[in-house]
Length: 178
Image (cartoon, rainbow, N blue to C red; front, side):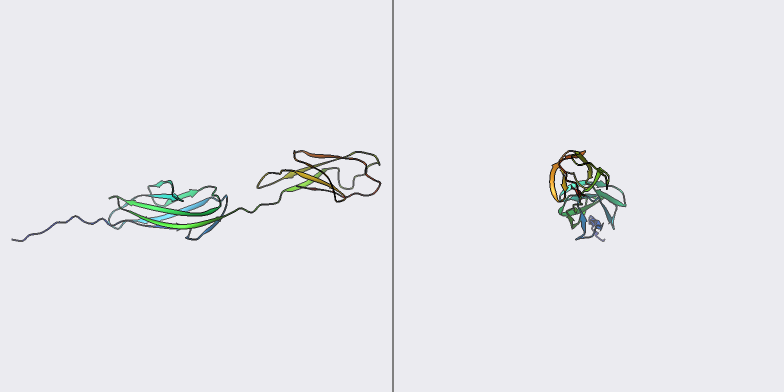
């Protein structure tokens, strides 16, 4: 007579890896980061991968390839954590850290729309100067008019316009700065 013992098989946890981004990766504020994760289970199957961005769940993807998008990320240092769960409830995780650098501020563009370059005026005329300004990564808060290097005022409302009087009879340099 033989005695045999039947023991419950030990469930092996899944294996999970954040494929992209890499640990220590750098991005720019405002970027969308596409995160890809691979996961497998040697004694069953992976039922889902949850993604956490700095501790906040971004959802669970139940099917491979496991993909997530982190939209319009702000500047700072963050953790990305992937947690894989298998068909028997075992879990495994991978954690990386990324850095998101502040976006570079781009200078606004500005141009004089009136008068045209080289325009002629009579002494005593009031000269109206108008300009347009745009900022691709922010807002224009004001445009300043300079005549011969001297400020003639700031206009903070588009369309930007100034009335210039008492100009002497010479050529004048007109410049606007946003």
